[in-house]
Structure formats: structure tokens, C-alpha cells
Image (cartoon, rainbow over all chains, first blue to last red; front, side):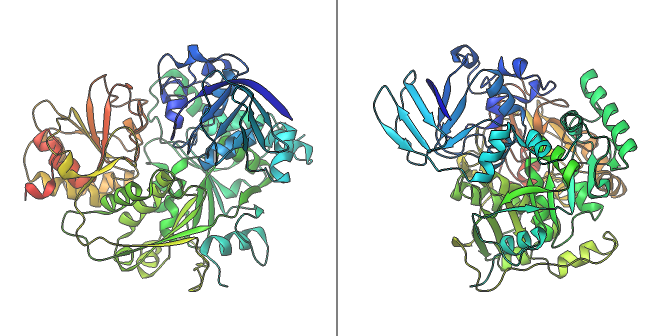
Length: 164
Length: 417
């Protein structure tokens, strides 16, 4: 699976309160949450996002509260995937279980906002088409790829025969 | 080679003879916990098209996040949850019983050797009793309701050994803030943490719970403390039936063993806007505050209330400061009332609120305006966490909270005694 998009760059330790502040948790509508995506980082951030963007982050992206709204907000804003040096563990689980791909590149170097990126989930590669640099990602185990392929944990559980 | 606690407990819960770091195992938890987010979990569960939770006896629901309901939408969620737990036969604690992480412990629902998964990031708390407990997301809880099973990756382990004797007025909160400052917000990312050493062995359950709770703030999956006589004594009369503690092998294979002597520790403060932005109090003393929050799952226990009052020493809350006091549970509230603590807080000019998460997550009961400063005993100080993104949150111990409340500025409690 290959995802292409424009780079949108944030820093280290972006927490889930920054991704979606608690005052918006009253809804679980991705479109509504998406309108406030990353507003906790910068009130003007939602205007910087274009549907189809790839978010590029540093260490520990998604730390803090376990709210799944964080993943829903990113999805709702039209972000296709997140590439980061590392992810907070519950955020990683939530994204996987909601069928939202995360790409962990421990050796991720500088990427400029607006660069064209191409991510190959199967091979575990991220190419910056603008700068020509290629970064290796940690390949995902088959078990996790299976959940992503099903579109998340709930459809995956259904596929395995749970649910009516 | 010996095994860590995480490797042993996950092997047992997955029905395997052994488990190694990196391995994905499917486990059946002894307990699944969720709170106000149960309404959202129910909506996800409905997508599976199932009517019944497979094993309702494995789950508990505790309302604590926005209690009592502050808006119609919260009230609808609570109503929905009450209907759901009744229909499914799930153990339930309604508004006012307390913060989920305190209630689970008080009700004896977390036992040594248990595997507990909770739809809350501070589920790591129960590691203080020798359980493996970790936070999960909502979809995962819905899947657990349906199947009683979930995947977990077996983590590698960092062992943190603490030595020395804490000086007077220095608490577990100072210890964990110091460690988070040293290790960083991702210092234990994806890993299991074992807290050990004589200093930990000398701690009460209240203090140990703070260590395990805030292991989450260094990215840890869980934060284990070996159960001992202190643990067994606390659990007497709370836990029904037998339990089987699990201990790491003496020759376990740790990714890292860190040792700290904390005999000279001073009060620690986490400055805005990250929990690992920690300094000794000397560096921030004198900073004016508008609000002091004494409460939450890392500062609202009986010992915390007593300590804050002891430091306040009969002085009133400073002019222009709002002091909010939230006992962590009804049990704490009743005991604090019996001891006259609530009266003393009220007489000092503090506002005693009902047990619950309160303003910690910025939904109600004391949110901050732009430019305001809050000193809080809670566990997070992220930008916007308690209201306005232009407000500042400083995290510290109940002793520092007491000293700050009566002086109106971030204050070293040792300077008041």
C-alpha cells in the first residue's frame, strides 16, 4: 500500500490534548473533530491542513490521554497517515485498531513542510520526493497488518467470526 | 536466563509456557475498566451487531470524568451508560463513588498477579499492587466486551531501583517527577517498568500508586511494584478469594537497570507544558498562582489531604487564590470528614468539591482563563489541559500545594515549618 501526499511538519511530544483539546470530546464525529485537529498546538493549525496531507512528527507523537478522538480528528481532517520517529504506545494501538496507518522511522531526518512524500507501508519506506531522501521504517508484524487491512480491530473481529 | 514480571504475567495470561519481548500475545484480562467513555464504547460495540457482552463479570464501569454531568451531552452519556450496565449486568459505580483508579483499588478489584486493561491512560496505577495493568483505547474495550481477548506486545523492561531515605515533606510525587525529568516523557516508551529498592519497599500503598500511575508519563506500558506485606495488609478485607502474586526472577533480563539514591531530593515541580520539564522547587519558587488544585488520582488520597493541611498550618488560603480540594473517592471524603479535614479546608477558604476527576482534564469545576497559573497535584500539565491554552499548569506534591495555597506563590513547604 502506497500513500502519497504533502508534508505537514510538527515537533516532538505532540500530546493528545494538542491533537484534540478535551473541550471537543463531547462528540465522536470525525468531521467535527477534524475541524479542530491540532488546535491545541496552534489555534490556526486546522487551516494549514489540506485533505491528503501526511503528518511528519518527531519523538513520542500522541503521548498523554488515551482518547481515540485524537485518531478520529486526524482522520476527519483528511490526514492520510503519520510518519514519526516514535509514537506513544496507546496512540499507536488506537491508530492501528481504527485502521489508521502509522509509520515509525527512528532515523527520520529533516523534512520540509510542503515536500511531496511517498510512503510504502508494505516495504517500510518513506521517500521525500522533493529532497530525494529515503528513510527506513520499522516493518509492521503480520498481525498488525492484518488489522490494518481489515480496516481496524472491530471489522477484524467481525472477520474472525465475532459479531452478528 | 530468568524472566521479568511482564514476560511472566503475559505468558500466564496468554496460556503460554513463556513469552519474550517483541512477541505478540493474545490475552484474556482479569478485569476491563472504563469510565464516562463507556457511552462511546457502547456505540462502537453496537457496530459489531452483538447484544450481549461475552463475560460481563470481567468488567467494571466507574463514572468519574465529568461528575455530576456538566452539560446535557454528558448527562445523556451517563444515562446511556446506566441503562447499558443494568442491561448487561456489569459491575457499576455511579457518580460520587470516586476516581476510577482509586475505586478499583479500594474495592479490591485489582489483585497481585492480575492482568487489567483500562480505557484510560493512567490504568498503570494498579501495578502498585503487583498487577500488570495498562491503558487501551475504546475500540479495544469494545472488542474485549465481544471476545474477552486482546493483543498485546510483550515489552522489554526497565528496572528502577530507589535507595536512601526521603527527607521530611518529600513525597512519592517528588520521586516520580524527578524520575520523569531524568528519563523524559518517552524514557520508558513501549516498555514495562519495575520500581524496586528499599525506598519503594518503605512506601505506603498511597505513595506506590502515585509511582505506578505516573509511569504512564514516561511512556511506560505498565509500572510494577512487587507485592509485599504492605500490599497484603492493604488488601485484607477488600479482596475476595485467592490471588497469585507474580515476581520477576532475580536473574531476569532487563533492558536497563537504573539506580538512584534520593536522600537529598528536594520538592520537584513540572513546569509548563510537559510533565518532563521538571526542576527543583528553588528554580520556580515565588511564581504567583491563581489556582491550587489538591486532588486527582495522584494527590487526592487521605495522606495527601493531611499533608497539605499540615503544611498550611492553620493559615488561610492567600488573597486572590482559589484552592480546590477534591478527595479521590467517597471513602477518602468520609474519612476526611470524620477527621475534620474538610472543615479545616473550608475554614481556610478552600473550596471542597465532590470526588471525581474535576478540573484535571479541563471539562468543568475550575477551568483556567488565559494568562492564569495553576499549581496542581495532578499528573498532566499539557497546554490547554485545564482550559485555556494560554494558561500555565505546574505539577507538584500535596505539600507544595499546601504551601502554595497559603502564600499565593509556588512555595517550598520546608520554608514554612
